[in-house]
Image (cartoon, rainbow, N blue to C red; front, side, top):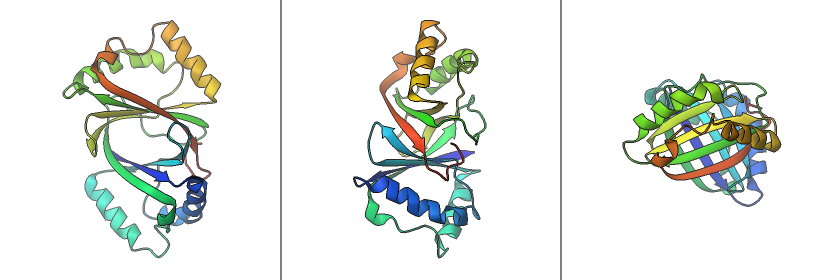
Length: 205
C-alpha cells in the first residue's frame, strides 16, 4: 500500500467552503476509490485541509486519478479557495496498523518529524519496542515514511476523544516511561504537530 497525503492551504475562511463543495461531490468520487480521512486544522496552521488517499500502488493511483479526472462531477472546482497545494506519498511503517474507519476521534493529532538521513531503521526499531504498551493508552491510525515529496519525513496520526484526552494520555505515557520511545528523539531534526477535526463525509470521525 501507499498513502497520498494531500495538504491544501486555503484562503482565510475557505476551508469550510471547500469541505462543503467537496462533500457534495464526494459520493461520486467513491466510484473510483475512497478517501481514508478528510480533515481541517483546528490548532496549528490555520485554514488548512488535509486528506489521505490509500492506493495499492503508484500505478493504481495514476489510473484512478486519470479516470476520476475524466468525470464531469469530479474533481469539483475549488481552485479559488486554495492558495497552495501539496502532495506527498508515504510508505506505511512496518508497525502501521490497517487504516481504520469509524468514530475514533473526533480529535486527530498529526505529527510530522523530519528524521536524520539514514535513521529510519533505528526509529523503526525503537517504535517497535515501545508501541505495544503505548497502544494500551490510545490507538494509532497511521505511521509512515515519505517516499515522494519532501524526504526523510515520518508522519504519525493519533485519534483522541478531546484535546483534554490527548493531554491526559500523553502525560500518562511520559510519566510512566511508556512513551516516547527511548532514544528516539536523537534522530529527529524537526518535529511539528497539528490538531485536525473531521469533515462530515470523512470515513474517520
